[in-house]
Length: 244
Ligand code: SAM
Image: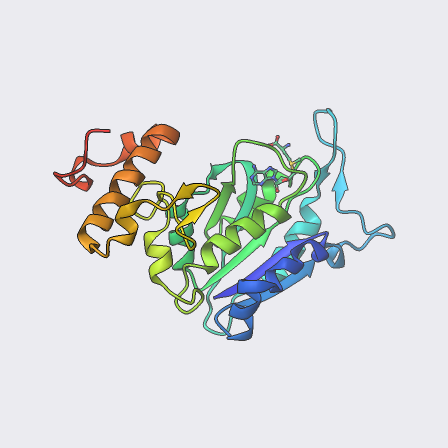
């Protein structure tokens, strides 16, 4: 997968080259190019923002700078393809595991990091005339800029790509893959500070362990995220699911 990021703070995206993502880059599974938006600002101060029409606090990112930057970074590749453009904003559709799976199927993603009060809306409207544009929110809170949101999205997407995780089964068993939160996990020792690992996990009985894990996932989801449970279609419950 090819990933391009446009930002006024390229250094904020350094973690894209660390740990698991760094390994994925080294293995050639993803390519990451971070572009400095100011390269596309031509006035003496390299300004990327201006005051908002209609008044009000804060500044808005200028359409001319973003337009030129997106024309350059999102130019058609050798096969004439364009990226899917992801624009983080609190006003976007919620970023979920399902959206991560959707984005993981794309060969090329470009990200536009907003700052200040955000990007002039015409930038998104113009880009949408030639490529798929996704305005996404990583949660109901407001960050200072889109860079952290990009790190979140790229990490969630990249770990779904074949070869990125050491064991692909990990992603299949994670929270949200079956619509539920994952239950608790344990490792050695059996007893720690007077707290024991549940007997069933040491029983070697794989059917009983699978059943226990399913029950724990149901109970945890009911307690912490009843909205997820309510959204699960009836056919996703097996007949031995306890009434939680
Ligand atoms: N005025 C905007 C509003 O109220 O919706 C908030 C702008 S915020 C201070 C600046 C930038 O941070 C946004 O353009 C976006 O790129 C990013 N951002 C902030 N919160 C976000 C969130 N929850 N999800 C995704 N991006 C976010």
